[in-house]
Image (cartoon, rainbow, N blue to C red):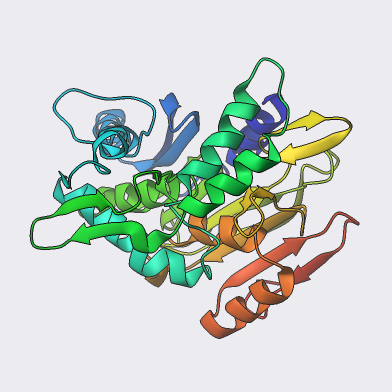
Length: 339
């Protein structure tokens, strides 16, 4: 956790340089610790403190709303969220609001095929086993038979979405949803678009490593974010990446959330073909442009959990900008990755 916080702090420092000539715009920042179980840092330019405070508060409110909507562990008053869907959708269709329904439809129709099924929100039965193992006082891998049984209940076709009634139903009563691989990135994208609609023209959102640029810095200079070094702390970053308006950079790695048992590291990123942590690479970085609609988070998880050859084919077909980082400290870039 200390390393993650340090990395986030350094990522912010990389993006802080000011140009003295921009007298009408000042750089401000806000940090929150209660969103998506991570550190959220937003920085941007505004004409004054009051203007910035209003913009930052609105971004925080938007992110908080999505945090509640996508929470699978807690119920909130006056909102039907994924906790409520998981609790009731096996018994009867559950009506949800416009935002949650649009998100679930996007996850099923866009994210799942874009990642060749590797990012699957219907895989909650498997992911819950690993979550509980990781959060245990004595972390250990789940029982192999339990994993095999859970894998029988992750078919996304059993997630039944009724567009007319705007309801969610589980055709498999043992299926549950888990949007940890996609929810944060989607929320960041929606919050960024809403902020731009409110008039925020220059900002960088970094929500637990999901980085999204709004506009440019005053004077037209691009925002910059770093690709974390997955092999150690020296250097902290292996590459700096410039972000144009609407660009997102998201990284998934085996060093972010894991436990060790018997001398083996078990990361939180699960290969849904086996039910066990993926071991193809150390880390995957995805640079997504404005027309991808928040896919970077889903892609980074999906490509981490796929054999690299399949990921490279997907990247080439869809012009994803991807950097694969291997355990032997070598890297592989897609054709669209910046040099």
